[in-house]
Image 1 (cartoon, rainbow, N blue to C red):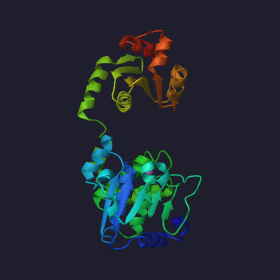
Image 2: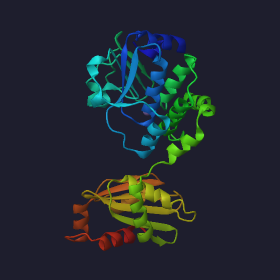
Image 3: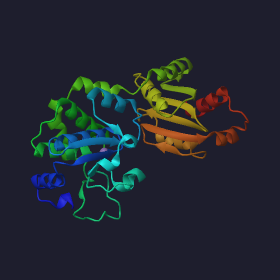
Image 4: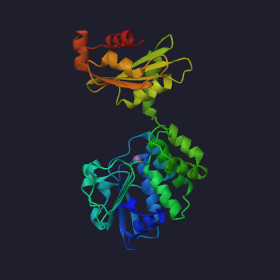
Length: 334
Ligand SMILES: [Mn+2]
């Protein structure tokens, strides 16, 4: 069953609901990013009192602090998939994804699939056993679910509205990419219903206390020259902290070029942020590191991943000391 061939929103809602019976136990399976979380929670709300139960199962642990804050502050009910007795459910739903995206998704036979990613070249066989509502032109699945809520005349709670709006904002990167009129229309509909203080706490929560040690390191070891700043953080657990530190330094009003580098396993990762005016971050990193490993990006944001082995060869060194990495970065980037 292909949802888009249905005449209008009422038809689509009616067909969606016709896939469920009052005694159904429904399992919604998601890869937990904000858009998937908002969409799954909205669908659980739509099915409330229409089915016996709805459980939202996540296929992996949530790692990003923003998403952990979102789940905690909005109290989104979730269960890890491995703790779910899959056999006790009678209906299976996938939102914000398609079966071919992930082997875990592929192991289910879904009754309903609601998504906004591109369809695979081999379109899934449209049959009457599965309801497909895939709209690749939409910026977010949260937009599709907001439309269903409106059609069903369900006013979302403040927490649900906040989750959906955050889903739309993250997937469209604040309407900087892949946005269409429907996304903006749903944003405007949700906006007055949102808890804005909770939303801004979710949006800024990208650090853990343990990360402060890297800020200490960054503040101590920063090298400032003209409008440029460079920090080498040594070993870091992942490149996320490099992104946060380089974006933090770009907040300084007269810094126009900010670089944070660190070792992640056997690679030197360099993250650059720029006002995109004086320097093109992507081109600069490509020029400096392109011969050693993947490097590139846009005018304002870029990244390079240099295998340490390649760096050793380039610098003719057996051991890469802190000083030698730092002076190499300084010579090439400042
Ligand atoms: Mn999405």
